[in-house]
Picture (cartoon, rainbow, N blue to C red):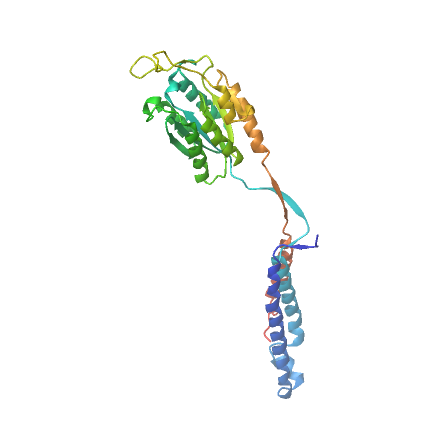
Length: 323
């Protein structure tokens, strides 16, 4: 390690004008000697404005102040200090299943209503950062872009129901892609995707694996029970299979666990234990990414103060001279 360490060594080029200025002043000072053949030496001290002795001290101090200023500008440093790296607050997108199966009432009053209650609890527990909401059935739709105002998302939740969704399909894979794109469009390389759904699909698992390889973190909250329940129709009755028997929608934990590792999967519960578990592991993952950086501490201000002290002496009456 060199001593001292120079932060801005390119300022050393500023010494060149100093040398040129000194040479010019010395040449002009010598030119006053031409008065020796015109004015008697005994009278020169009384009629000439300057003399060598009178200008030597102020000129020396100004030169020293200028050189000291150059040293200050070069940023000398002897010590290093640790500073935290600047990083953006974490961002996440909540992905809400709004397919017809969310009308099933194996959890009361029904899956969708319980999911919305859980999102309200989740918003109150999330750390600082931007949050977005994407709802999906046959296709995904951005309900709320990324925002730090969680109250905005909470205000939109009561109006969400399966009737407003075009189509009756289930496309979690597309919803994952759209949510990741939402984060990237906002300038995030990755982020947290929190899936709230009753099942998954092989296509969604494939997309999830790709996103995890890109640095995205996926948490899954399963909604429903393995016993399941029929799906009510808007016009009355229940969804039936082709053979006429009633279709029972069940929670598929096996597929959902493949979206995220088991550590980050929880089944929706009546208390907040599920959210505490998911967020605890998510926050640990974010904390592990914190970094600090060692930088050189600029000590040039000490030289700047000394240069100011020297320069202030030139304001004394009679110290500024012209040669």
